[in-house]
Length: 141
Image 1 (spheres, rainbow, N blue to C red):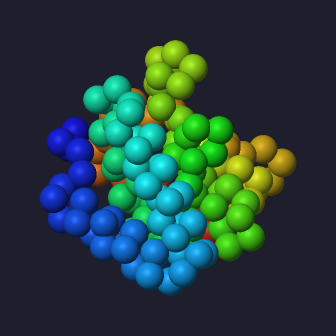
Image 2 (cartoon, rainbow, N blue to C red):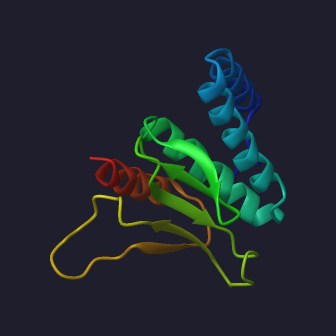
């Protein structure tokens, strides 16, 4: 597993927050929502935090049109209409044995009459990252 956000990732997030604040009221609101998400991730237990950080970087890189925010105290990502598309629920939130990446009905994952909308996440790996990229790209398509 990684050691959390890299120095470059932290610098990029700070730069993005500054860009958003420079846009005015709406941008400042987005910057505040991003900061709330990052603060929530920072409060997680170490294993959950590392997973949440990887999820955040992956979603931000592959679906930049989604806006980070918190949703029921969880890191989440909303579309332009403000609808939550994807969220991360750490295992400590409800004392589960695993963290979860979940998708709301705004995600374009429909497949027939039955499809998964939540995925247990216990460890980060290149395979996990690849699958999350596929799901997130489909969700915003």
